[in-house]
Image (tube, rainbow, N blue to C red):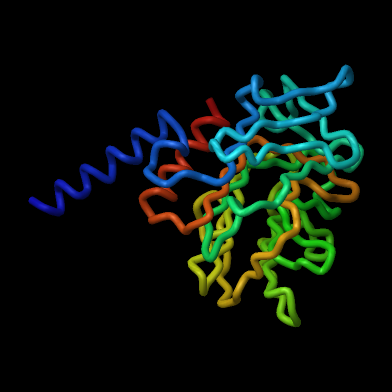
Length: 246
């Protein structure tokens, strides 16, 4: 009886979050970006993104850094709302205390439009000597693969590749799940690899996009500064998939 009740409660949590989003699971994300909410995005006269408002309540808003990341009402991968990396567009979120973590759950819904054999970062904190993590949708050196790279900001950097992901024109959800000891690289709910490695929690800004020869689209980013339970991870995956494929 207790098992049945517990299962019912978990299923209800999952169902509720699928309907209402990442702010309702009992753990507040540090960043929640939703391209389908056009009211959160400001653009110039050429539809180049100037700001993208964080919906988490932490005010970790996105600002234009360089290039021409462009808002599309009709994107290429999903045929709906998207922000793409035109002209090697890069956007940034200023680092502050709300982004500090000892463990984390990070979800990035993305898709490659063209150029999958070149490199492109989807979400990353890795520059100026502050080596932290990269979630990449395309790595040329690995024959066009998704990649998670993590570093302790010292001599140890670990990479996990999934060769052949993503195919051009395909949508997928990249995840970094880190419990303070072990990192998992997950694509579309499937664990592609694990690494026992500390992740340096530095002061570099969080960045969206960085690549050469790749046109990539971003749809949803959810960043929790603690690792979620399996039930909550499942609920966020279902929410993102429902949001992107509706």
